[in-house]
Figure 1 (cartoon, rainbow, N blue to C red):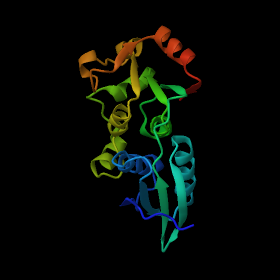
Figure 2 (cartoon, rainbow, N blue to C red):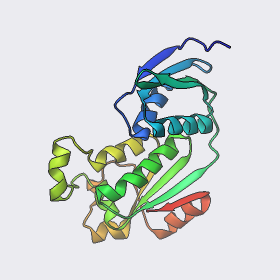
Figure 3 (tube, rainbow, N blue to C red):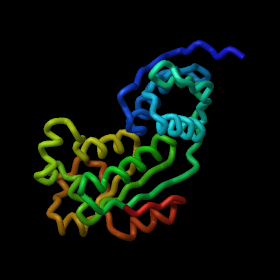
Length: 209
C-alpha cells in the first residue's frame, strides 16, 4: 500500500533533545486536521526513532512510516483524534542546579506533551528557580550567556505553556528569601505540604527529584 502524500513537512534536524523536537512536531500537528499527514525529517539518531514511536503511540497519532532518508530519518505521521486525559503526574523538585533540573524538567514536559495532567511542586532550593531574579552559579553564567546552555527559566516557561500546574512551597520561599512578587508569573500557586499531598493522592504517577 502506497503511503499518502504529506499534508505538511517539517525539518527538525540538529535537535537531539527529544522534548524540544516533539514540541515542534506537536505544534505542527495542531495546525492540521484529523487524518492529515505530517512528514518529519530528523537527524539519524537512534533515540529519536524510539521517542517518536513512543510519543505517537500514547498520543493517538499513527506512525505510518519511519525510514532512513540519506543522512536523516524520515517519519510520516497521521494526526489522530484528541485523546482524553487519563493519567495525572505530580512531581516534587528540590534543586536549583541546572544539571539536576534537566531530568525532572524533561520528564514533566514529556508527560505534558503526552497529554498527562502535570503538577510540579518546587521546594527547598528549587523555589529559587521560580524567581525572576534567579541567577545560575557563577561558573555556569558564561555558558548561558554564550548560548551553550539554556537558562532554567526557559524550561519553566515551556512547562507553563504546556499547562503544567506549578506550585511553590511557602516555607521554602521564606527560607530562600523568594518574595511572591518575584515569582515568574502570577498563576504559580503558593502552598504547603497539605496541598502537595492532596495533589499527589489524586495522581497515579508521583516523582520526587
